[in-house]
Image 1 (cartoon, rainbow, N blue to C red):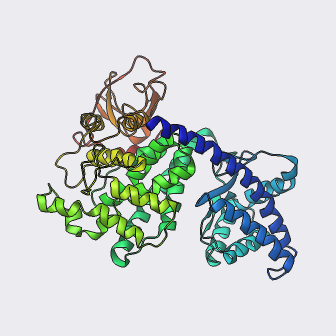
Image 2 (tube, rainbow, N blue to C red):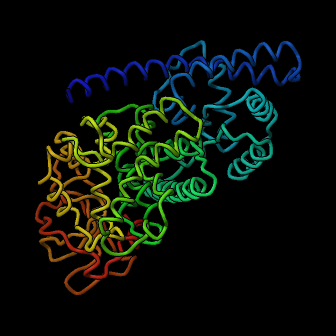
Image 3 (cartoon, rainbow, N blue to C red):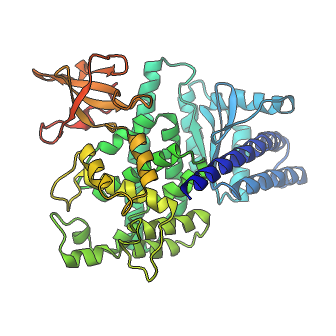
Amino acid sequence: MFSNSISDIKKQQEAFEAFLEENGRKLVSILYSTIKVSGMYDANNNRYIEQAAKLRETLSVIFAQEDDFSLTTKGGHFFMSEARLRTERDLDTAMTYFLEKWPAMGVSGFSFSKGLDPRELDKFVYLISGFEPVEDVRDSFQQLKDRLNQLRIERIVPVWIGDDDKDTPEADKQSTRAQARKTFFSAVGAVQETMNQARSTNTINVAKTKRVVQELINRIIEDEAAITELTTLRSFDDYTYVHSVNVCVLSLILGYHLGMDRKMLSNLGVGALLHDIGKTKLPLELVNKPGMFDEYDWQQMRKHPIHGVKALVKARATDETTARACSTIFEHHLALDGTGYPDLLTKRKPSLFARIVAIVDTYNAMTSGRVYHVKRHLPDDAITSMANRIEKAFDPLLFKVFINSLGIYPVGTVVALSSNEIGIIAKNNPADLERPEVKIIANQDGLFEINEVKVIDLSEERDIKVTKVIDDDKYNIDVANYIDIG
């Protein structure tokens, strides 16, 4: 059954990439034509109205398959989300226009979200048509963002051009880490806002949740290690929010390693990000209770999947994404053998997304020092403990892929080396999981200064190997201090 689902995933991915390529090419052509027409006619002119209708029709076809997508350029090529568009003569004029116009505006393109209304689209077209860039692209980008906000264009978001063609590799690394950090903490803030909103007004901003997930997917595709190491950060004050983002990130990484396309990742990510939304209906003193839960506490806590589904249904934004998210929220505490909670009259196997989130949720709770856990587990201890419950609690094949995606030593793990040095795993080596890249933070004389930290690749330094995992709490090592290094 699992192999069939993987085969189906690959077929769906191929079909979806073909869909993106075909409609991306159409969008480039029609968007260009609409912008040119808007420069000659006002919005009430029949000529513009006819052209704008073609643009809306093209977008509606795309939105029927994809709730969020991006149209961007990189290295002289066009991309519809992750699908590269073929460059052919019939698109030369349109592509040349955007390749010249967008960089001057400080953008590589734009992301579009479902729900974009005709008036919002018209305002966007006329803004782009008449926008006059300034010399500094960063100023142009900021001015463009300000105008989009002033015009209340919320479902079209500019994508910063970055410095891909100008910076050194080291600067690129720093930029990637900065983007990952910004996206991660923006996601934490968005979860906090969503949960507070759900608690006080019984509403959930599903559209915003989808945008957050899309940004996380972008970061994972760009540099998986840069976003993965942020999941090692621990904050008890913001545990529920950080945990939700960690579960989303790690679930997306697992889905990415399974070969899921962007649409499937988006559906998975929304459910993962909202998997604990039902806790907003529980007393705060229970959610944040230190120490172990008693039986009454657990009776309350076991209701949160049902509360979560009810909260999402009340959002009145029913589509494929929210339907799958409801399934994930409801089933993520159901074990593979049908045990767990909520109690069901008929035991059933949880959905693929719920099985993914169940693995990640358990792992992150064990390794994060959750408020009602007496002791935080080291990553290898958590994996061993979970492996002992395989087949009853977790899908064995998904668990294997999860371990392979994390590596034997997950990014952010503190380790001792045979060289008598201490390091933090910076990046895994898929060809040899026992030989990752490591940030060397200390030798036998003690911790280095931040500016002395270096990164070594154990696949090249063959005389050095990892000897054991170290408890960073025990040795007072704050992994957060080293995230932007290397």
